[in-house]
Image (cartoon, rainbow, N blue to C red; front, side, top):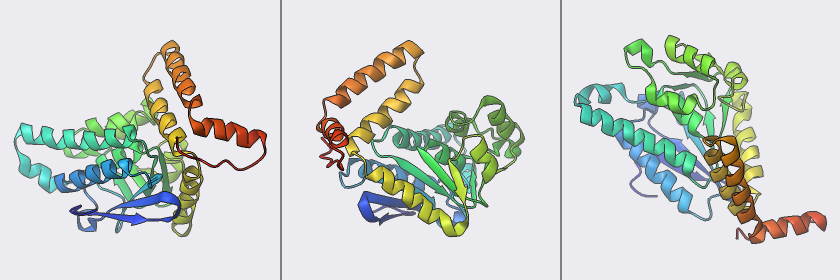
Length: 261
């Protein structure tokens, strides 16, 4: 893809794409430029039929420090602040509402909007030395938008402690509270993330698309409405060729051949 500043996209095997935030001088801060590039990249990969899974990572010493505070300080007008935070929110919504599964691969620090980015991804894995925080309170700017994503992965009391103290948490605790799936040594994390991405990529694209959409929508519904909605989605899924192929393959004890239809 052309004209993507601070972003590098790498092709892996089996339809797995790695999207790297490449602005290590600012600790991969989420500036206007980087946010726009990320949003463009995710939209294009979401429409790409050859892309099955997206891995998101940061270059250099860490994942992302969040918004670029030098840029934020220079904005001054409320309308410009709102433009920045709305753009960031659009990116997070694109990740959640997109058709393709997104896996965060985290090393170093994932702070503020960087932590929000991790929480917005469908799965998240980190190196053992990774740290996560919503530290806005330390600079007089409460992490209000980051807490939207993180509070949907972490329980209220644990989330409030992160927000009120601004203190970073370690990878093992991030796993314990549900912010990440697991953590590994630096030498193993790439292999482990590619392993889980390969497993997901081996499934029907159509089935994954339907399931991801249904998962996030039903979470916000009352129980009875959620069951009505998911029954409708499963009925829709059953009409697909891949569902028929998958069931036949299981009964015939063979490997399914997905058509993604």
